[in-house]
Length: 275
Image (cartoon, rainbow, N blue to C red; front, side):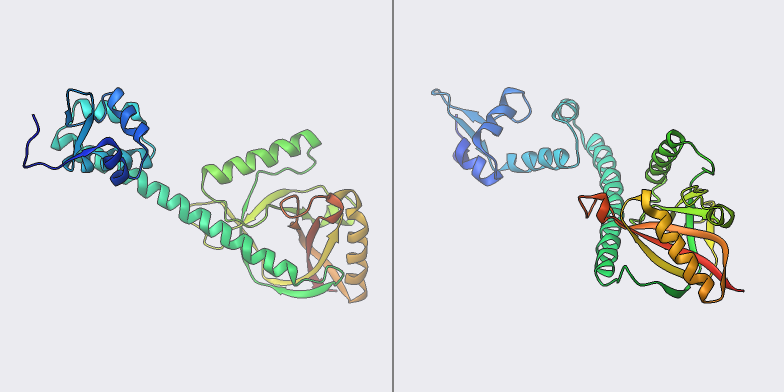
């Protein structure tokens, strides 16, 4: 029997209120998650406005990643205490997701800004610049690695950045020691790194010392990197400088922005000192 004091809605009307299609409500009824308040002799379904809040909670739980099966489990044993516990659990999940989204937003901002800066660069120019102290997160030592060991080191470093939430959006770079560059072993990296503008306490960071650096750009694949290094070292010598302890490399343009490795751009920064 219909209660004359309660307004009932057809499936179509209730679906419109809930902003879903009728099939969603029919499916919820079939699995026993949300059944109509009334069904008449002809099989027509009717919902009450009181069921809208019930529907909203289902959609809320779905939005935070809860499965219909888990929602059904809760609904089978619902109580005020269980509801409070469930809401607190979901609040914790949302807080974690919000932190993750804020981190992602920060990464996107870094990539936007660095790409805008790259568009203003003259890749033929070699300059001497003052380098402020930078905090870097390093990989394990990868000196004298085989190609297979290097690939694994990159994979492990990326996994470590993700696990420790240390991916700041800055490019992964490589540090080479002075002796390897002077010996012509330009790709014998000692460490991988990622800049950490907001370092956290308790992390084993490396400080790139402040001072003068010679900055140049290599356009093309890594196989031709030696040509650019020779040019940089020649300019360094002509200007009366000697090579410092570390050399830093990082991509300006890579596979994210360019289709061919001939168009990749690597920024090379050589620590230098007056001879």
